[in-house]
Figure (tube, rainbow, N blue to C red):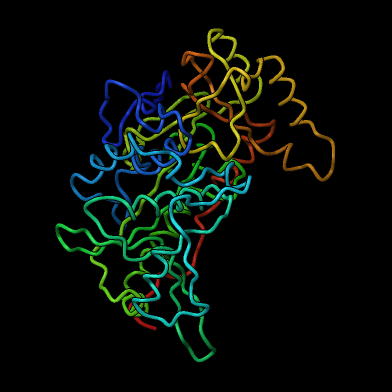
Length: 391
């Protein structure tokens, strides 16, 4: 297998168009974590440049440039709260009053419009947080009009009403008038081991519940067809012209060895990427970079680039000892601690007592790689059949 060494991650320095700007992208350099997370959700490179059976998300011309210009100077107090702030009791949308919805709105365009005005839940899950951020952006961007968000689609049958699924986002492009349906996800996958011909199923989640191939199969086969059902058309009051996949995230490779041939899988050449290593492999990496610093990156900080004060830095020896203790935790009810990889952030000086992320990766416990390779080798998940245009 041909591989290339993962040096300084150029994707950290790229804008949403993949070109190399003169300064780091906004989602990496902004001082406010609210700004960084919102910029990451809208301006970072997508994971995929092609999707079998579907199309990757496409923004209206000029929308992102105008959005970045606005976001550069936006008051962070007017932006959605971070997960940490939500956990501390902050409102999800500080500048947007939450209306009182009708208890059981009747189906139809008015019900769909309510889902535009009603912000996403206060869920602390990372995926829901990313949806919240994209929801906010679509409501405020130029060149498009948000028609619906997080709308449940239901079908009446002989045995009552069942929920078919949920439309993530439906919006109209103002220039063309086209109605666009997006299914959105923010995902983090580790490529399991070194395989001669990788597939999308070789990318597994840190806890191995999810695989990239299965996720795409579900989105393309189950979620995107929802927008073409009669129930969705009646609910929206519009016919969907385009259905697209909005997939963001990071991919991680063993010791930074990125295999050749990923473009054949539709993986974008400028996708965000990191490394994963066993504990001793990480320690060797850290020893080879004595001028840099390290910290553990909590799940709430997985989206955008990290900016860490001196007080958040961890000494390599102490961090190594803490991870070794975690992976050896003997308590029966702490199996998740022993088996779950831990994301670390490598940091470079940013001045004035601050450190900026220059790479990120997972340290995995003993036995994780073998389990991940076994998970990757499992056959593709056989989900429910794609929805037809009628009952």
